[in-house]
Amino acid sequence: MRFSYLEQIAEYMVRYNHIVAAYRYDDTGIRLIFDRDNSWNFDMQRGNSTISIGEPANRGKVYQAPFDVLLAKRFNRSTIQSITLHNRDKIIRITVNTSGSYKSETTILQFEFTGKNTNVIILDKDDVVLEALRHIDKEVSTRCVRVGQVLAEMPKPPYEPQYYPLEDVREFLVEEFRRRSSDKLDRLKLEKIALLKKRLSTLQKHLDGLESESVLMEEAEKAQHSGHLVLANLDVIKPYEKTALINDFDGTAIHLELPLGCHSASGCAESFFKRSKKSKQKAIGLHQERSNLEAKIRHHELFIQTVMEASTPEEIALLFPSKTGGTKLKTSDSIAEFWIEGVKVSLGKSEKGNIELLRNAKARDIWMHLKDRPSAHVIISTDKQQLPERLLEAAAKLCVDFSVFEKGRYLVDYTPRREVKIQEGANVLYTDYKTLSVEKG
Image (cartoon, rainbow, N blue to C red; front, side, top):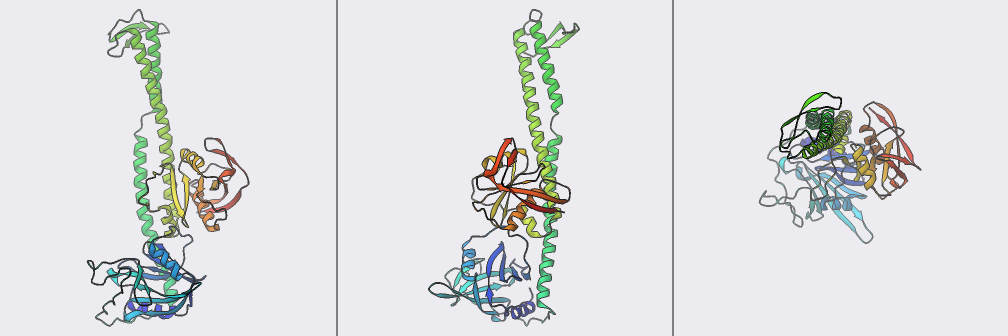
């Protein structure tokens, strides 16, 4: 971001006296809320950092790293002492004071918009590093950023920056939010839809390559019929014969091809019956596999439509939660998991997934389903019964988006899992429920 813009933005920011909340909204973004109308975003990507004003509908991941814990502790409900452009460089310093039960603390939040060295650093009043978004060792840079060490000054830029006046600082920042959101939304849509279409193509090829259940059932019936014919002609069939001339049950003479290696007629009959049973079992397995693949294909088609209809980057980010390292629990491929406001929301991709959700949900979890029509089941994993309205609305929207293609207004019922009684499979009865209205499209 240009020095001239940062200079004017820092001058504009001095009107604020308090920080209501401070938190990380994505891996490199810090949000400061000064009041209900002023939610500022500091996007600290290396080489592409910026400031904007605006707040998305939902917050996905809740960060709990030491940096995030200290950010909340030192800046939530804090009083601003000063906001300056530090050292005539692309560095904004926000100095605050927080009052506790026994003492008050002065803390500095330093945003460095300095290209490859872009960073967010939390300092005490003596410029000692308390935490940082990016820790930098002396092996990497001459300017070390380590907890417990005094932060060295950044060398001043060797040029006089040009001045670019802003007519309206606030409008510039609001428009920056719209522009960044729009660019990011378009980029994410292209990226995620391409990924989903690739997965969809793989599933479709697998489905198209399946054998026919009807052909297998015909083979099973034919093998079973041959087995009964052998039993009816035990005295005619000789050991180790390859074919036998026998009469069918309607009197027609036929040449029956016998299984290889049969040492007796009864052994041939047993071999035919085994072949029949194997074909039947394979047909049943294929039917189940076909049903699962068709359910996954429908889920991916709904997924693609949901991404296409997303209006903010945060909506898409919610649909693609980052993989959490270190967990050894394998997630079922019949269940999709999302995170809204730090709360896990699970959704059944198929009847199998719906059954798994119903079976594994806890009594106090919140269950959701479209009113009076088939839909994906949704489980909100929580012990709290008073959930934020926008979390419920976001979960209900997931239920709608992954259940129907048609645009319109839909009703979604929700209730604690303990109020849901399983009838058969994923069919349920439920009581003591509430209803949300969701607009799709």
